[in-house]
Image (cartoon, rainbow, N blue to C red; front, top):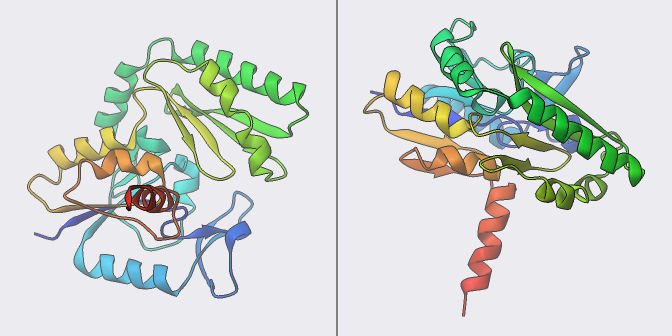
Length: 247
């Protein structure tokens, strides 16, 4: 049986237009306006070709359902999106079994998300930080919070992290990567979705987790092997830790 590769997208397989280099010529996904929104370089194209020839690929992304469906690459298998809140089947339909499981985990999540959204937006306004924030839905339920700086001023966006820490809820995950801060309630984890797929559809398969951010480490723990781009957030932290322990 082929191994199964749980593959993150952004900053792993392709890069946004703001991070594009002249060597990146292959379009990986479209923006919400229909223009090219993500790009691959030669190394990413070789990675994709290798994985397609030797593994069953499961896209494992924080992208929304719509953004995942705007990926233009030939990725036709299972897809985990919304940080694990939604699973798309190979025919691109939403997996109702997982949808029902996630729905059973949400109770008063909307009230908490609305409260946190108000707190962060007010803090940004008080400090003249130009951000946008929204509640990302998962099916018929409120899913998680997402904040971005409108001018891509990452230090300003990250200056709101102490406010998030002050109002942190037990079991919630703050995911920070570049111009993106996401607040994920306990049911929303890539790792939960990866483990469910492993148990229900990929039992006894060698599994490889491939991703760039700290939120990906959660599902790495469920895989036999893990891979990280050397330019990634997670690898940078690992490299720094390695330097700290050297004599």
